[in-house]
Amino acid sequence: MWFKTKTEVNQRFLFITLFIFFSITPLLTQERGYASYYHPKLHGRPTASGLIYHKDSMTCAHRNYPFGTLLLIENEQNNKKIIVKVTDRGPFSRKFIIDLSYQAAKQIGILKQGYAKVKITPHRELPHLYELLEPPFPLKFNNKPTIKDTLFPSPNKEEK
Image (cartoon, rainbow, N blue to C red; front, side):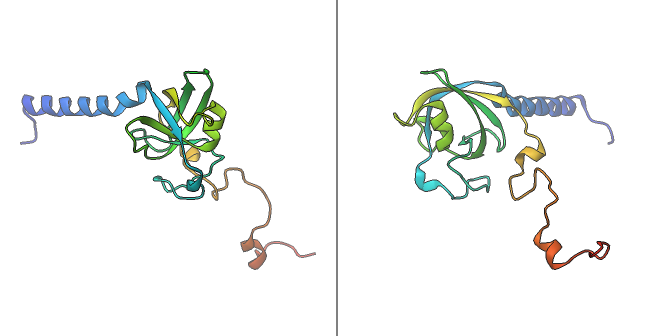
């Protein structure tokens, strides 16, 4: 039949509603717990998102938030705040809720102790596509010649 029974429609509506609720709920909540930071040996290694970890980037590892989500992290001991981007999964210790990059940990003031109690709030739920793209994709275009231009000059350029 081309029409659905009332029970099928209600079940489908309930399923869609629950799916949306459980998809959006983590983005609207705050988390409190302990934050740590990456070991220096991880510098230059790939993260779970495929990006290369750099110790001077403002990135983090979180278990649940989608890659590219911006998070506002507040150190509850000194009230310093930073914004980081989720690029990795972890931490794998249940004691911690987030792993910060070295630079993020430095700015929030947890290098000396190694960990701190923090509050995590989503800064913006869904990132824009251009925010997800990392170099070598040119975010700012320039007119400098590339290797392709020097090896294969275009025929319409005038030679002087």
